Length: 111
Image (cartoon, rainbow, N blue to C red; front, side, top):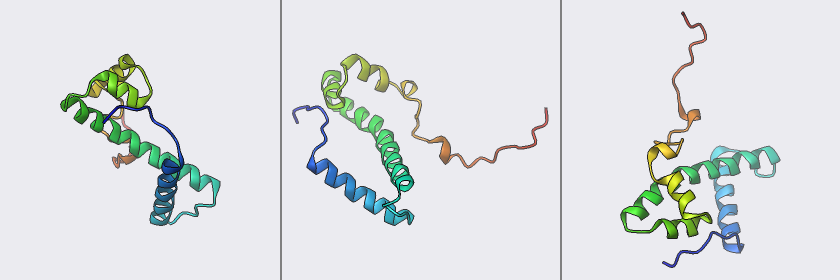
């Protein structure tokens, strides 16, 4: 594949629209409500951001250069490498969102 910068077009709009509709149906949310739309968009963005480090790691393991990855991300090779070269560079590692933490919060700590 020839690396190309990301773009928004009719195809990406249609796919995102389908994803929003499917997620709204799955979560029982009204797609016509602005706050529901914000929630759905933020959820899809969050999920995409969680997948990106894995996809980049796989691309690097398959020999893709930082230059090509940077082109795909519409950034510089230095910025791409800085952000994705190690798990420490990505604060989401290991892809666990703080909202996923089900550990109860101690509301009565003893010091």
